Length: 374
Image (tube, rainbow, N blue to C red; front, side, top):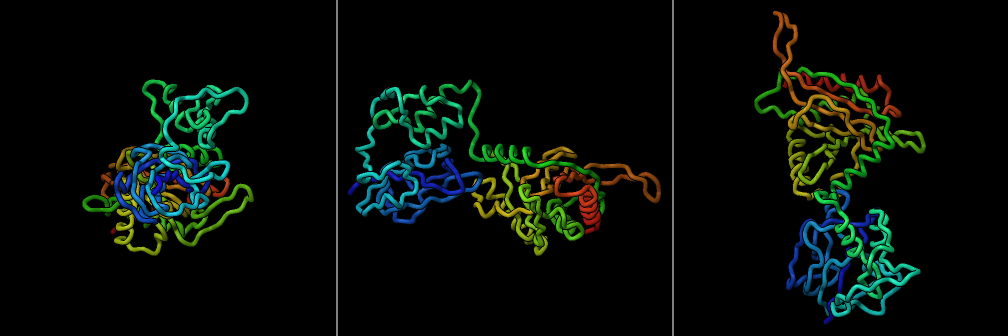
């Protein structure tokens, strides 16, 4: 029997770290190869990591909520299986080890000050130092032969953090990156209007489902907004199906799950899938497939407050519709002034790919559908 250290594997797509969402095992548990060990969140998607071997869990090397780098220690397993280190994609060592690392070989050593010259640092430590703007010359390495680990860089970062500041979670980091990308690459313009929804609003009216239906109808009237734009080739792709990204506000940040092919679903099917996606977002259990393929987006921020907004478009999409809080307005009817329930709408579009006329026609089609009874 040997105690083997299993590191966080490479999860693909250039991801360098993940946040521990939930452990599925505890020290002392017996596991089999392929059994889920832990759920981690990377760029808003939750991924289950299976055990590479059968054996007994000896130690968990990260707490729930911790952010760890690819290649960092994840769990120690006692196993009598032959271990192929080449299959452990989380092992980022520069040379092939002579044998599996054991718990005894990982005992904590006293800090060793680096010698001048070449700085020994793990790849994850170098990446974090670049991200935080930390000079590795100022970091004391506690790894073998004074190698700087990610933990060493994190410890220095925490020491230097100003009082009252806290690091972003994985979901908020992803939001920040996405918004920065949108701000750098999109040329936004916004048109706004009021929809008179007096004929159906109130009671058990499902405003979000009606908005989704209206967007599907608007795509039929003006397909140019249900598209992707490629700025490098100056080309666009129009989509036949409407895969609608739905902005969901949660305690941990903004998520945008995707409601697939909404034009082919009835209101009951739309509501059922919405409930599933919203619940998964709030529980941090959205899968990557739940967040891919959006062709246009919707933000129903009215229940939270606000009327109109200038929204952010996530490339390669070219449009997002925002719906604010329903308000009472006075309109001139057949018998004079009368109260009406009006829904404020904001359509933000990428003016590189969408003309003002196309945006206006799309918004008018949304208004027309929303103003129908029932």
